[in-house]
Length: 240
Image 1 (spheres, rainbow, N blue to C red):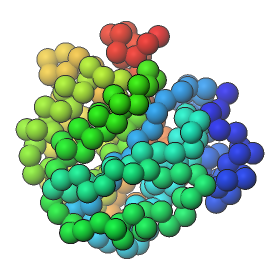
Image 2: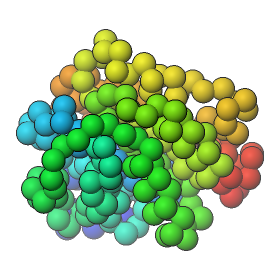
Image 3: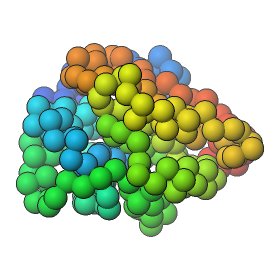
Image 4: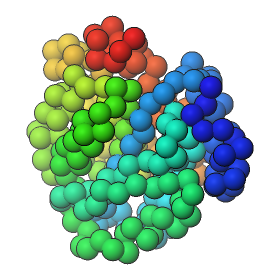
């Protein structure tokens, strides 16, 4: 049974009904129907991201994540972390007030800095631990390049493997850019040599993320989640 019904979505966020339905198809396809999970969104606020805020790509991703979250979490809200050199904002997006939400948040932020993953990862971990949740969590982590401190990001990911958090990295930008080599490396870190389970995935949404269909995006967001769930349950990280 879904966390939030289609009727509720129709009443509170009619513009997201199509996304909600597409997300449901992907969840069923991957054997995740009826699962309860927290959903987080982490978005890159570095200077090179300016075009993606301007053309609505970040807002579109937030809407899609909300459509997915409505199946998995019943509070109708997704915690969001904006990051650049530091954590720029910790807030949330909600079904009832999703339209233009990203623009409103960004309007209150300052200078767009560089790219540093680990502080944003730490913010997600703290939020999850403080929430007292026992459910698994899917963290959609969007970025347009590698971090300035690769070692710190790698250490955080390896330490976080002992927590019920799965990190799905989403790349915006030129697919051929060397900026994404680090994310491919994170995706392939040795198990169990470096981390107890494979707790991360990566896919590239391209230079024009809006061209990725809803169906493809949802398939990529949840495609590795079932394998991680099985491994995390086997290790006692996620309760069976």
